[in-house]
Amino acid sequence: MPFVIAIVLLVIGSIVFHVMSPWWLTPIVSNWSAIDQTIDITLYVTGFVFVTVNLFLAWCVFKFRFSAKRRANYEPENKKLEGWLTVLTAIGVAAMLTPGLFVWASFVEVPEDAIEVEVVGQQWQWSFRYPGADGILGAADPGLITPENPFGMNVNDPYGQDDILVNSKEMHLPVNVPVKFNLRSKDVLHDFTVPQFRVKMDLVPGSVTYMWARPEKTGTYDILCEELCGIGHHIMRGRVVIQEIDDYNSWLATQTTYAEQQAILAGDSGQGAAFYAVCSACHGQNGEGNMALNAPKIAGLPAWYLTRQIEYFKNGVRGGSSDDVYGMQMAPMAATLATPQITSNVMAYISSLPDVNVEETIAGDVGKGAKLYEKTCGVCHGLRGEGVWSVNAPPIAGMSDWYLARQLKNYKNGVRGSHHMDEFGYQMVSMVTGLKNDDEINDVVAYINSLR
Image (tube, rainbow, N blue to C red; front, side):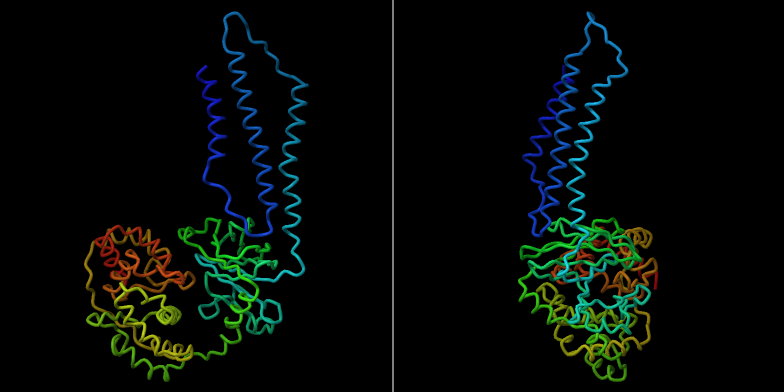
């Protein structure tokens, strides 16, 4: 009897938990209500089977419980029962699969008036490409990807010149307009989804997959990767901003095209030397840094990383927090690099500076630091701290150790990486949680010193 009661309570508890559960589907904001209906049908069919089978089991255990006055009758076959079970099972399976076939037919047939947007995934960021005035996305090839050409654009394809490249985790879309998402991966399997859209699709290296949706409600929603793509999978987040068509067109008009980005000439180190004079007052004539002025070494850092930090300081992504005292000092200095061309020239000059050694100021347990480094920093910054541009991680070996320690603490304390437009800082905030205290930070930095 206790077993019968346990089964009945299991069924009742499951139903009550489902009805009262706080974990329901997010509100839908696209045309894919058919996905919800298909999920509901599956839930009803499997739920009915679950309740029926378990209550039948409880009834059988109770009715045919042991009694010394009767014996079990062995019946290896029952054609009538098997026939009913076959028919009912077929009906249940058909009820679950048939709606999905209709939904899939709609899923693979993209409306002719759909606009196209390319979604590019990599460990562990999203970026986006929009067709320009010609409405055609230009050719791109993974073999052409470099730090200067992160989308792998074919410079000889005229259709790509007006493409709009958004190297950011924020995608904008117009409301009530069907959108075809062309999906491309730079490295490993990813999966693009916006839970409120209800549709998802894998990004497969070497091919282009697609899906489509029609956003039906304005707002900002999370973009997730739902394919385990490495240690940073949990931080591969983005945002989609659904806007009225006029607001969307206004945003689109502010973005630069591929041709405009190409128009920025390669940096001239000779011209950059004059503007570097402002930087050298703190960072040193050779970019060696100056601890007394809280200016870290910059010689040896790649141009793509330094350029990003300059833009962050200009836009308030860094130096905007009242707790970031030294960042606030840097912000007006970054503003002196008024144009992308000037910035490019200064970066060219910094790249020409010798990568000099700097004094070590942090002491720690190198052995413990090595283990911590392997679990946290090494995945992105390289096992030798050499940096990995494909995951947007700069070199850290040979850099100012006091500055590294301070930045780790800033990430840990929310001084850095908390701005909503800090594309990569929020990832560091997540990773630095693996360092429990200042001692472990010092241990890691001491190990990094050993890699120089």
